[in-house]
Image (cartoon, protein in one colour):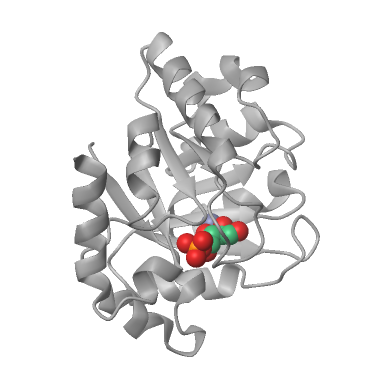
Length: 217
Ligand code: DX5
Ligand code: ZN
């Protein structure tokens, strides 16, 4: 699939989500951060907003669920229009069953890892997944500094995916910018979430293309 850029709508103007999505027409995905004030200490948006955004934009949605009980809620995000749904493995009671449900509902299944969560215990789950999200900040807020300590895990995840001969995408999220994107790509990431870097730029589409170029280099 190559390099993909998924700008985080968290850094956009929530009062104008449809026009903000239109402003990033070069994006491969719209990254939508769902937070419930339990799994993370912040609250953002949920199903009705995802459904509305899906109707307002032709760009597929990549929903990142930072919520407790994803087993209960994640499949509903497929119904609401998400093309990819990522649950956090720290919160999932039955990640295999959940990933299968997401796929059966017609979405790509993603599994997210906080910075302190290793990939190794989940090696056997990789064939059930379409994407692994390696968080490069502690989830909960945009605009945080990239954590270099996550780079070895990106490398190890890429190696495990290759070892099993799988086509699992490897997403990074948190502090991704022109300064950090190359390090992530070099370590093996291929899907890049960027919030403040894209929406803080004068020309968001140009920033998307710059990030893409830097990652492809
Ligand atoms: C943080 C969210 C991220 C956030 C990234 O918990 O998962 O998607 O919006 O924002 P930046 O790119 O500004 O670090
Ligand atoms: Zn996110």
